[in-house]
Length: 342
Image 1 (cartoon, rainbow, N blue to C red):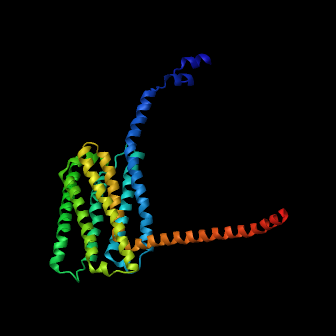
Image 2 (cartoon, helix red, strand yellow):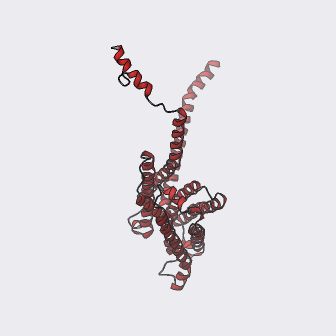
Image 3 (tube, one colour):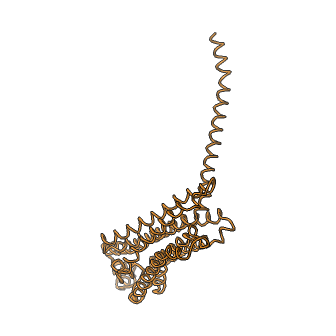
């Protein structure tokens, strides 16, 4: 029996183990390191999109909770809701594309999905900042402003947005034509040389001037208008809340400048640029919502401070009552102690 087993090259378990191929540990380590390097950027993009999308959910809830039926019919409110939902949709779409590549590394993601996400992501900042142009109608009401003045006010932002839209469309026309073999949006961006494209540079520079013009004109007009001077009481408090809301637009401009700096200081590392683009887009959404929905978020701020003051007042009263009870309880003991010493 033992002879039969020893003569059979395939029958024994020991023989089978002896002939099994052994993978060197160096090869296993190299494969694991390569896989880790491959999923590092997708996981980073998933984290960024998830974090900012989770910030948009309470903002959307607050926007509905503190609004009125009349304000919900305003174009700015409707566009704010669409912008927030757009940001949530982009985060979900991004996570789907990135995680699909991580969970199925041997299966290529649909090229149409990659192209569609790239186009939507490129148009997203343009759509988000379109709400700011409508806000100028608050301080330049068409019923009280001449057509010549309206044309002079809106000529620059309309021209800038048309040029930016043309740059985005032209760039992504080249994108779709040249990224037939790209496996993910990041590889596609490297294929079409995203950072060195003249259309990208023009769009980023114009975005800075667009944001600065809209914010400066709105604040300047509000400060010098009769609407600002006539405000009193509660409405004056609402007007003062407009100025902190403009700080969100300053943050957007700062991120635009950071993108320009990254463009000329780190011209070959596109991953950093895409991270900055993600952050810049969601900062734009948050800034636009706070800048155009300041009436609703004034109530958020007011409710927060009233709650804080009420809590502080209750805590102060509670502490005072405790101190009073302790002093009253200690008074008889002090009196008894004085009599005993006497």
